[in-house]
Length: 414
Ligand code: ATP
Ligand code: MG
Image (cartoon, rainbow, N blue to C red; front, side, top):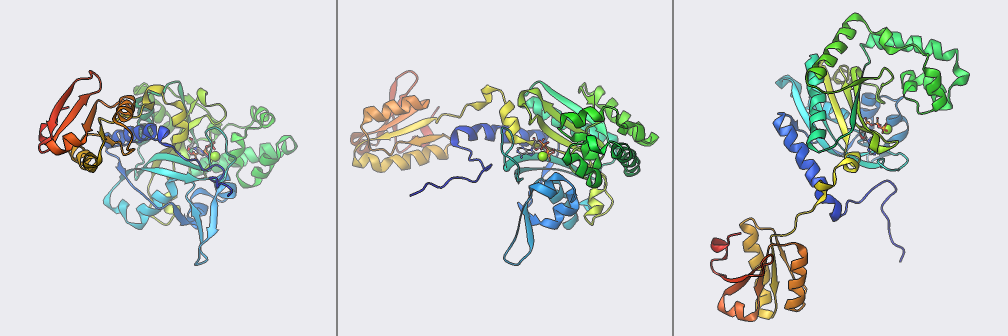
């Protein structure tokens, strides 16, 4: 029969990889705990309208990348392509903001119909934080510092933080007008994608990967020139806050981010080691989104990291999977009946126990136990089974001793 395969861009994580993933997730969880950020979990499936309204129709994510379908009740549903819109929806729906400002984190799979390549999948994983109800520039600094320090805790080096201010809504409108006017005069020099964006999402043209367009943009009006004094001052405060924390940052006036809801601070953390898919973390301020989704006015800042890209950057030492503490080995029918109960007792006192159920000879089982990296083997033959005295072998030194089955848990010292 023909073998079934996973769908394109949907990746299995095999046991050899999952211990690294667990370590990464654990490190992040601990980092968020220390930052007093609480976890929120939202459904993978949402009404399509949430993303259309929350992310913006003219973005690549909504326009080209969503997994949308009609369910059996003929409602348009979408597998979440990112976390922010869902977190904001949930916060509004459950009135979280009436309980005060919220520091939240989330993690899990996201879905985007993109061309799969290194560091780009159709099901991928993000962790992210959202600070809801925080307007102070210090919250931008804190959010960025939490990302930066997490990357450091993961042992990832060679990162660059790029920063921009997209200003207020009015600043952006003024800039958009200036940019559109300037680009319209040079429309024929733009790539086709950018020509389309001129009408739908002109700021995104700054993000174009097309070299000729990038060349042209060298002389285009600068976003910074459109910033009001207040926006400029706010931007300076964020930069000063980062400098005070010794977090190096580079101002990039072309950094606009893909999603519509950003204003003021926008940032990305990139790594040279990743090739074309260089961004590991992206985020910024989205003060209008809560209201846009029907909630109260609430200023917000947040970011998301792509875990697959983090995985590519983790140093090797974080790769090891843990060997068992003990392997239980048995031969003979009376002994075989004790193998699982013995393993269970040892697990109940916290040992990581593998149990050999192969029915192979002692010698072969012992050899396998040695290879597993376990510290101990517990040997049960029929003689041990009838006497109730099990053999415990130290696989490092080769020494053996007996241990009574009756008081296994009490006498087990590792
Ligand atoms: P890119 O420019 O790489 O497409 P993006 O701006 O679309 O990124 P965001 O929506 O900001 O990405 O998501 C935050 C992070 O999630 C990215 O920086 C990246 O690390 C990761 N990410 C986004 N899309 C994918 C994907 N298809 N596969 C793997 N990781 C992804
Ligand atoms: Mg993208």
